[in-house]
Image (tube, rainbow, N blue to C red):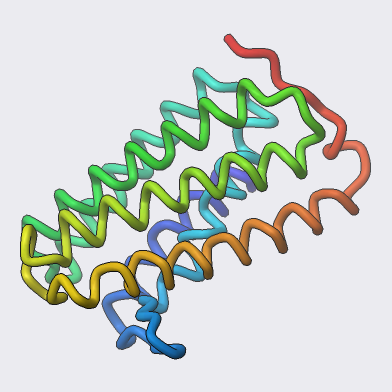
Length: 179
């Protein structure tokens, strides 16, 4: 079930991002799929908690391929697909490695690793995929607001996930030893 939730959250995030216009709150611009992208880090941590670091990388590769195929099928340009794949692999790797090395209860590892993963995912995708450097969808003036908006939403999702995991019981104290 954990793996299914992880993979489905990535596919659904791509579909939602393609289907709905970004929402604006104040100066921030946030694609609708960002709500689910924040959850993917939590689901990935839950997968890693059960299967360990090495197997988790196999699931990340599977998710990367699945995400790229879905993104391309939804009509994203090759540049957007590449930017998405690059931001995904960097963010998921950072999240995995931080989660592995922290010697804290699970909820805190989920929170801290997810914040870093969310930051990297947001910054890399917006700069490489959406800015004038990439597909030129956003002008440079809008790039900071787009990055910050996504970071805020992903951090809130990480916080909610950490709070829920803190209440779950036995899972919250399980530590993964780096492989």
